[in-house]
Length: 346
Ligand SMILES: [Fe+2]
Image (cartoon, rainbow, N blue to C red; front, side):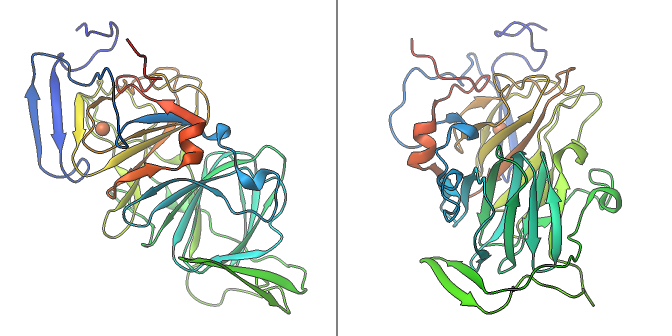
């Protein structure tokens, strides 16, 4: 079947899908006489954008004391930030308001936490519960991470306890390690800023875990299986979420033989897609670190995910409406919503 972009197989032109609750609620499909995803101009804040995470002027690249640089916030207290940290954090850090999920786009890092040490590399999601103390040590100069903070608890939530995620094999927890002692600067981040303590010992030192499960976990994007429907297209499914489903995390990596999705109105979620690696492209996303934002209710026609060469990407859906910060707006530009390339002016 030919389509206006000449090459993608999928639904007939004009097909339009409206969904509630991400992809699991009420839905309605219409066929329209025209494709409706294009726009010629736009004014105002609720407009799709694209950028590359590496283009964000991250304050912690040259200043070891700086926190990650916010690139987006939503109405429910979610904050996304970019870190390009090159030196070890000179303080131990505790976020007293939010759970954090760190995605390693590039580089390797030791996460020294209250409950042991994790070594994270490209493609790793590292989830750190609220008030867990940690200190990050980059292992090289080219690190690039995106960090999501949510006032809710972020937890693994695949459709079944096995299948999408092999938890026994791929879910990593920190291991207790011997740490040097000494006076330590301890920063607590709350809604109104950072409070700095100086404590006499290393608060991260841990002798052993005697009960419970360390509330820090790590999972690599490459080991999360995309949900696929063998005979037709279908929506992705999340592998992690918050209890109110304000935040949903999906793999959006290539998945044959999914048909190109229809034009979409996501009634309840903004969609943020992060392209991690190729070799294949996802629409016009082909540079590692490419990120796109499609605000809720903005018509889009997602590129085909059936890319034989393969690519890996992830999707963050936020129920609270997102807004990009100045740091993100200046790092990128307007986006067209057919292949997620730069918006071209007629
Ligand atoms: Fe969508």
